[in-house]
Image (cartoon, rainbow, N blue to C red; front, side, top):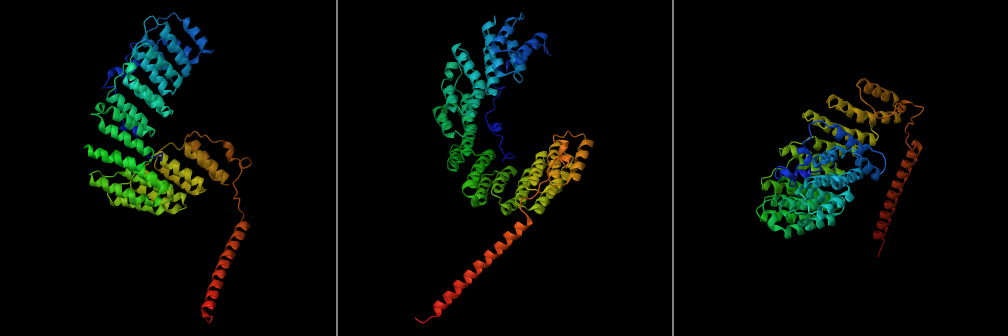
Length: 483
């Protein structure tokens, strides 16, 4: 499903800096001139690369004569956040809050909390949030949203809800932004029921963002594959005058298909097509994404016939398949041993003028190598090169060792030399080209064993047939005997 994962964050309420310019990290407003100053470079080096314990870090910072400002502190954190361990950044920030003659501003604390949340450092978050509360500072709505999302992602949804319930202690108001932030965070991991509880208690705060709230809750129920509750949310949206859009129906369709994939595979196609019919009745045209959700689940149950039929149905209904659609059908064909048909589907896609992503070829080459069809994998690689997509390194790294382990060292050497001529950096070792080092794969089942198994099967079939014949003759004799 990696190709079909819906871009959830693009539909959530954006953490919009335009709505609240103060939420922009202070580093963006820094008065430090372009280019790092010597003082900044030296401090970043101490925080990022200094040796010794955290106490040694503080001792090194104490020896600096430079005057610190709040903007400089944020600038150092911004410069070190991708290099220094979070514990060193935390100790630097705590040292700054104690040593600075001019106190750190609320924006500095909020920016530091955001950095630690993005780094998933729960201890640092707990320490700074506690300091924020103890010092009577303000938590920005954007900071709360990032922290809530991090806590839920790490399995601490109770802490996220606890922080939300105590927002007043952080001078952060309950408004559409904070309510939407906690709802989005909870629903992103399937905690839809708890999100609905938040909405019930803050109905007056979501008047302007109801569509976004409903989308989030629908997504939350779909994460649990709860078709009944997802359908309830769709009905509720219509009842309050909010028509479900394409995202809502695709979310419900994914929920329905994934549920049927586990419990009712035969219902995949008819129930999905019913949803698409409902979409059209509401003037929403299913897109290739809608069909790809169904194709992905059909591939999961190796439903070859239905997958090919859905691809044809897309064309008849005026929905042009994209490269993902062709990938999903070709994939299931290859996995079920229909290599000729799979190649035909790929060539059909190329004939339509579609230029797939590199992942299309990477995945299919990997599948063909996995089912021991290296010749077809090599043909797929030739198609990739003809499309001039570039990025051939991963394909060479898979094909060269596979060819050599299959005994085709000559073809492996050809690809190796070809890659070197093209300047491709290979990850595989040149040792795979040496027959004295690389072990050639040999089938574990011998021909004699296959013949023996075949003879045994034939004998069993004959025995069953003879047994059935004897039973019929007995029944005839019984019926012919005088009563």
